[in-house]
Image (cartoon, rainbow, N blue to C red; front, side):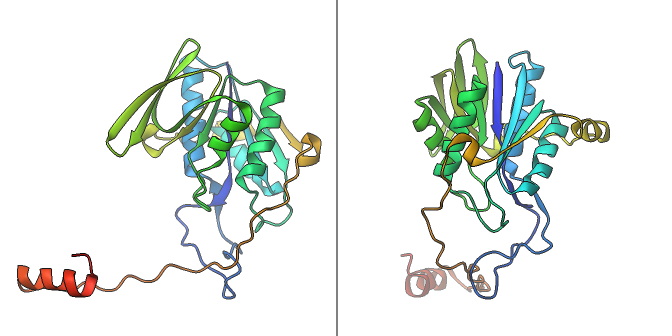
Amino acid sequence: MKVLVPVKRVIDYNVKVRVKADGTGVDLANVKMSMNPFDEIAVEEAIRLREAGKAEEIVAVSIGVKQAQETLRTALAMGADRAILIVAAENVHDDIEPLAVAKLLKAVIDEEQPGLVLAGKQAIDNDMNATGQMLAALLGWSQGTFASGLDIEGDHALVTREVDGGLQTIKVKMPAIVTVDLRLNEPRYASLPNIMKAKKKPLDEKTPADYGVDVTPRLSVLKTAEPRERQAGVKVASVDELIAKLKDEAGVL
């Protein structure tokens, strides 16, 4: 079975994001970029499936700017076999919308014919949580979202999902789209020898025109602003005072 894993280049999760002074977006100057953490988990799960003898090949795909090559090389160093980069933007501030990403991924899947697509449930930069679901709809494939557990049994996948009431296990027919959650696994670090080997692994470069997909944005970001700073807490002398503050000041009672 071939496994396809979409990965996205985002601001490293350890970096404190700064908003531009004019509110037109996020400041990316001299900011460390890395693979979206949820996508990293998806790559790790694909590698574990191959190690368990349930997958033969792992293909990593990234859609965005040319610099996403670095992200794909990270996936290759972790253990992916080859990579495909679709250069869909020249400006690092341009984010490709979920529908356009899903259409491009569908085109790649039509060519590659994978048995499973493992994707992060969302990207930490825009928090859309939409690409996996849109891709499943375009393909007409089964889907399992927010996966915290995955097991392949023949032509079906058992997906354990985190829901409000606890855990839900569903059985989906392959081929399928599975979007992964944080508690699925702990991604491995790429070793130095694997980082060196990744430089020699195949990385194909494409454009949206190669797949006949229009990536013109349908949404416009009107303004970007930082969240309000949290106010300092206060100590209360009694339960009665606490109730009064919750009722009169916080308005939650």
